[in-house]
Length: 177
Ligand code: S3P
Image (cartoon, rainbow, N blue to C red; front, side):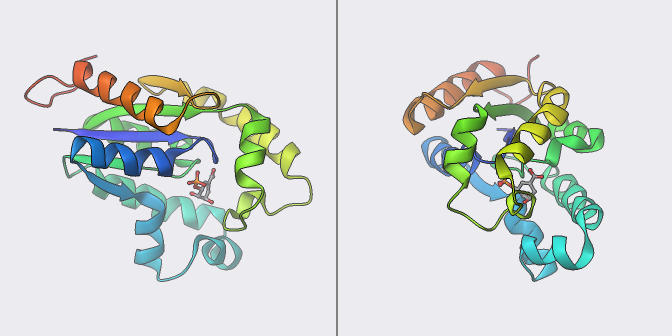
């Protein structure tokens, strides 16, 4: 089985869904953010603060390239992973790319209690969410499929993706587009 790669804005449910989906399909759960932190031996907040976002994006691209070399994984990517075309090309080279989406109020609700996302640790996170979502819309649109998670349960989203993966990945695991 090739990979199932989840992309989408912060707070759209990528991590929760990816863990459940991996369990459901008996695939390996992989988080690019976790791999970045492991590789750097520091948190994403520290990477952003001390080395800047461009540096973070370089490490993120390297991790995505490495992850694309392996099969049978559900890959949980960071919300900005799609903003470099090369990243999306690597993802598509070895799997199906599913974008999770949600409206800005839902994202705000789901993210407001956490402090581990440097881009949302700002004075007006709602505005930041709106701006970033608008700027990234074209990138998220490059996914093979999009699922709005705002009004669905985790189980419903997992089943939808399992269905898509079942019909999109041929028995030999080659993506069929
Ligand atoms: C980011 C999203 C985060 C993490 C980093 C940058 C982004 O991941 O990669 O803080 O640019 O949207 P999540 O989408 O898992 O929160």
